[in-house]
Length: 194
Image (cartoon, rainbow, N blue to C red; front, side):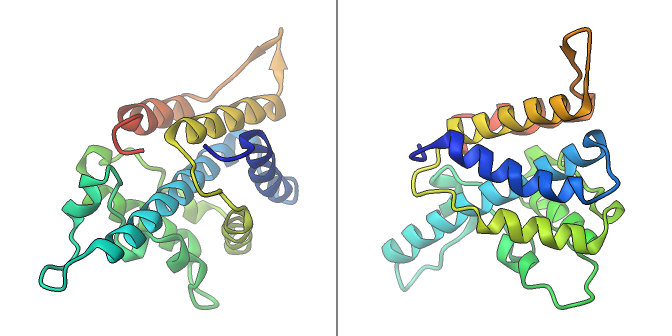
């Protein structure tokens, strides 16, 4: 687990909320894309660590395959879905389309995620998306981020989104799309891939 998950949660939230504050978006419009990018950042972090391990243990006769990542309990990410690929898009690129394509590429390689990941990034401004990618990339995830820590980050974000959206009679509202993302994406993988 990361040395201080609470600090990590706060740093990720500050990165997301700073940009939300500078946009005209409500939390309900911003929550799904942000949670999707946190998912992508975490999946990329796990994939990168597995990639390093596999390179060091690989054989020269047989290349590393998708099955090798899956054997390590890591979701396979094609190049188009790598966080670094999105960060290195050329100036003027349609970042929203690239992120949507990244989510589709993940779904294509991981059938259990088909039609679950958010693909509405083209609704957000390019500059906003690029700043969000850069800010999330700056946040060091640590060396041992477990699925439990990732779940806590999601839970923290859901609470923060609910608080910024407002309360009615002391009750928080979590949009059904956010609940669906958590139930269908995070829960099935808890303890299996993460």
